[in-house]
Length: 309
Length: 248
Ligand SMILES: Cc1cc2nc3c(=O)[nH]c(=O)nc-3n(C[C@H](O)[C@H](O)[C@H](O)COP(=O)(O)OP(=O)(O)OC[C@H]3O[C@@H](n4cnc5c(N)ncnc54)[C@H](O)[C@@H]3O)c2cc1C
Ligand SMILES: Nc1ncnc2c1ncn2[C@@H]1O[C@H](COP(=O)(O)O)[C@@H](O)[C@H]1O
Image (cartoon, rainbow over all chains, first blue to last red; front, side, top):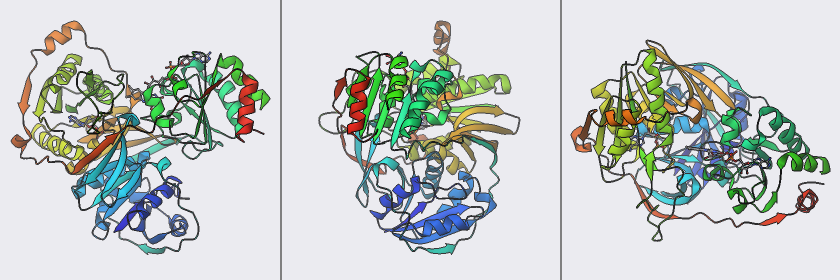
């Protein structure tokens, strides 16, 4: 089987999420990559070095500069004559593009896979991860999004892919990119952080979140996450949200502070290796999944913890 | 302007899903069902656009007869008219998107607002598929919608922050959590909704083949985590962190 993996990048470097997809794709067959963007020679060269990669298709055109699904999907379709499966990371861009491709190919997408059982059979979470379904597809071509935390990352070196330019399918004129506000942070990205410190509604306001959660994260070199309640209340930006409808994370250590542990939150972090919870309510559901729990007032505990580390 | 809002009936988000012992799926017998939360947000957004030139809101659901309740809820919130496409079998996102494409051809809405994902199967596909089938623009994960006479500007929640796109109409939007806070229907509006029109159709009426492409072989519970230990104080926690090598 020949697979085509959509390479997520920021115009300069390949994003980590792509590496887990390469691993998933390699379980199906040969791995080819698609680098679409504007001025992406460096990205293509980097992608060609990923271990196990064959061809790297490069589509360099302004139409692909912002990964607009309306432009990228026809490009993917133009390459699917030669490929049997199209795979994307289950990131916001991946989720935006892949179903459009699936519809154009008249196939059912398999979302957020956790494992490859065979060429046509996969496991995936449903009901916020409260159930795991094993699904088999009848479609000849497969369109798949891959949960990044479920697969090892392919090595970023050792590969010797061959770079091949492909023709642009052009600007479709259906949508225009206006702008973006991407938060710049020195901290590790949530989806690749080894340690995550997460805060919930209990933090009460943005000042507390910054003065209590962040120093602890800094001490541990950790990424910072949040519950939906903390995001909705405006303590932190939306991309901090961990959960069913936020980011799915699985760090070595996840520290949940003042988070109750609603199923939608657990859906995003319960595959973390070690979960530590700090909550003043000893019956909070978060303690049912926590490896280490500390009952008490976070406003006392967390500064003391930061101090003693 | 006309807006179409597809709404799905799903297990209420407050109910803990239980996997059936025979491994065929999640038990939906005698549990509370509600409108998919993202679809409530979609209905709410459509209603708010009524001040901005929207004159009619049509809601549509594909599912069993009981999905009528979900449509009545949307009508009580403020939608004008409903269509139920009855299918006792589960219809996958591709089939749903094909049916919606037919309705769009018939109704010619300027905007279709869907939820970003249904919280039962967590697919996150239907809106993007519909946009692909129709060959129109799509703005997924919307946190802000600004409607003009021939275009819509949408702010989207993406990894790392937000992104803004402008689409020409007709266009497809899928909602994210922070787009708005859906209203509760008032009692008088619930009464009024009972007499709003609700048309019943079948997939065959639209000539769409909705036979599934995926077969669910089994559904199991995820590996369970067990509760660990409680530590008494910060010193004990620090000791644990040190033992794990997390702290020096
Ligand atoms: C469709 C849908 C999708 C959702 N998706 C997500 C998602 O992706 N991610 C997500 O997180 N949520 C999500 N939610 C929301 C979820 O249901 C919960 O409402 C949310 O996770 C609660 O956040 P919280 O734990 O911070 O707040 P709360 O539930 O209010 O919990 C606060 C906790 O802090 C504790 N506390 C208070 N004061 C202190 C103190 N001084 N010291 C120590 N502890 C204290 C309390 O005991 C309590 O346990 C979703 C909901 C819906 C309907
Ligand atoms: N059976 C259905 N009936 C009506 N709308 C649906 C149905 N299935 C999905 N949708 C719409 O598509 C969105 C995304 O669903 P999904 O792609 O299944 O995660 C939902 O939020 C609904 O707006």
